[in-house]
Image (cartoon, rainbow, N blue to C red; front, side, top):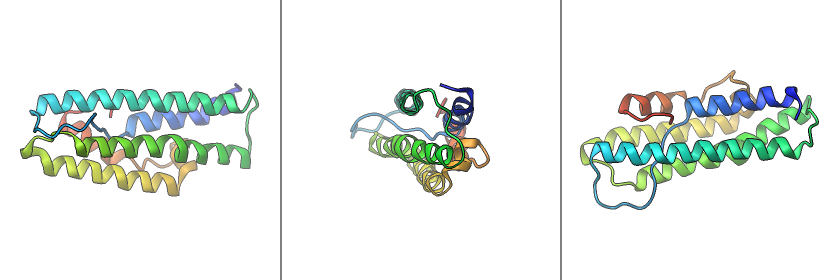
Length: 153
């Protein structure tokens, strides 16, 4: 793959990794302790980052080593946001909501997932800017996640 495609798409993946909100894993119905919740959420975040990296690789392979330019580059950026980042992050928000959220933290987790979903909508509305790093629609969710104690989310 050419450097021209790697740079914009890699920036997008890095941006997504940095600004990603977190989710959890499974359908736990019993409340978890904060430590258990954080551990499970971080595991899901790591899985989501892996899915996004695989999606980036698949997209890059689809260009057969040719650098998209102009409209083709914009189309690649839109495709990456709409088919990789957005679905992965929406799934995280859903999983997080399904986890056994510590009762005393329910409001904070709802704020994180709401910010994540708002950021995803914004990313979908401005995919090129999201991938190039000109816009960081998921930054609020990432900041809230980090303040809660989540890593790499």
